[in-house]
Structures are given as C-alpha cells and as structure tokens.
Image 1 (tube, rainbow, N blue to C red):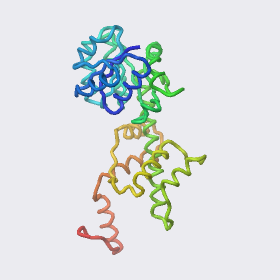
Image 2 (cartoon, rainbow, N blue to C red):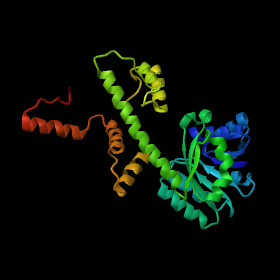
Image 3 (cartoon, one colour):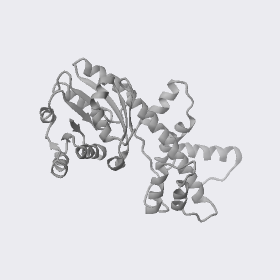
Image 4 (cartoon, rainbow, N blue to C red):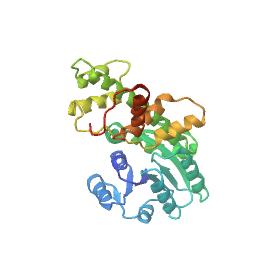
Length: 301
C-alpha cells in the first residue's frame, strides 16, 4: 500500500522505516525538512516539503497518518489538510490525543466527506524492532482498508479494532493509566530495596524477577537496562513528566464513578516529583511543630 506520514519524531520516523521495510510506499513530511530528506536518502521514502506536495504525491483514495503532538498541533494540521484532501480520503490520527477530541475530529472531517480513524500506538523507541501495539477506532470498513498497514506495523496479534471514533485513543488512554501504576509500584519497590540494610544489586534483582516471577514484564526488562547503565541512577533527576493520558484516565474514572486509587496516586507522585521543596510539606512540618513541638529543618539546612 501507500500512505503519507506527517511527523517524523521518535515514533513517526521509525514507523515509516518499518513500513518501508515491509514494502509499502511512504510519502513523508516534517516541518524540519531535513528529517524527511534523510528518510528518503537512507530508507527510500518519498520526501516532500509541504502538506500540499505530500497530498499531491499520493494516489486517491489517499491514506494520511498524523504522528504529531496531541492537542493544538494536531488540530492545526487537520484544519490545514481538510481543504487539500478529497472525498473518500482517510486521515489517521496516531497521536496520544484525548478520545473526545478524536470524536470531534471524526465529525469535522465527515462533514467534508473525509474518513477518519484514531490510532493509539504503543511501542516507543523499541517499536521499529519489536513492532507497535496499535489500538484503532473508526468504521469497520476503514479498518479493513488499513489492515495491511497495521499488520506491518504491529507484532503478531498486536493490533485491534476497538470500536467507533475515539475508541482507539480511549483504550490507549487506559493503557497509559495502567502504565503509571505499574511504573510507580516498581519505583517504590526498588527504592525500598536500595534503602535496606542489604547491599543488593538492583540489576541482578530485576533480571531475576523476569525469570518466571509473577512481577515479570517488559518494564522490568527496561529497569534492568537502566540499572546496568547506572546502578544508583546518579545521572538522573527525580523529575517525572506526564503526557496527559494519566490525567485523562483519572478524570474519566471520576466521571464514571470508578475508584482508581493506584493510578491517581501514581499521577500525584509525578506531580510531586517536580517540586524541589513542596509548600504542602512545609505546612505539614509547621503544623507538627505547632501542635507537638516537633523538631523542624530550617531552609538553610
């Protein structure tokens, strides 16, 4: 098949390479044109310099895949592409977008006769080698149209039609929420090990636990790699960003009256990691001093 790929960041570029290796024709565009030219020179993509050129290089009915940051950037590109595409063309949003935005995008494009699908893509920088687990939302007939692309991108049994518009991004949102909780559990466990009386090797333990234990996982394999490179993680700050999907998962749980304490606390812990000195913690220290005369640490200490 052939498709256009817009956005050649860490995932968009590697997805394009995997598709090219699978025999597909991939027309690429990136605001930094050099990235598109590099893919053309090294992997056989067709590089373009603007959106109009990308659309013109594809035969109707076209398939265009967006791998851009969620939110305003994706919104902008959908608006720019709408007058360039024709009725019957298919636009796929592969960003970690809010599923409600994906429903709105589907309705927006349908008014112009343009098909839409949302694709939650998991695999990160390892997807080129191992494949991308892909969660797709949209019409069944459109899913069938892009299935050869998904088969190339994903490992065996690694893609699924999850439902109508928004379903792909909804499932990916919950996937990321679960990821928050799993990562937090590993982080807390390894911190307890590191603080214990025993001189344990965290790389060896993470390797051990992946040999048949009930907590084995790919995340634990990645922990082993991290500890192998830096046992004490001395080169890292304990500052943790969040992409937004953990927040959306927590909000969805509240809206649906579903208790999700682990995911919620994992998100809150990430927020706490960005504070060098929490004002809330200062309030706690002050209250303990006031009611019990407990010792406090002065700021200069």
